[in-house]
Image (cartoon, rainbow, N blue to C red):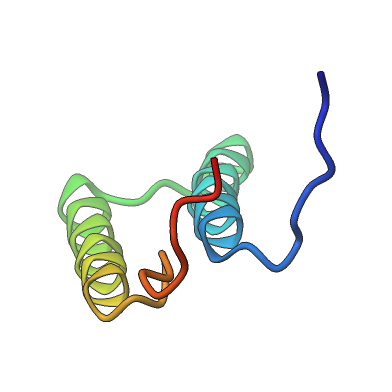
Length: 69
């Protein structure tokens, strides 16, 4: 069964943002621009840290709402 997409979901937008970053990296590689391993690692570390902080303060997952089972 397909459910309607909740476009206000912070988890959805966080996931889409991560996937878009990967897409940009892959498209850039097609056109000959590659990130060095060091740069890619640093960018990944920054994104992970930002997502961890946002999750900790409840931006990514709103802890004030109960489980909607």
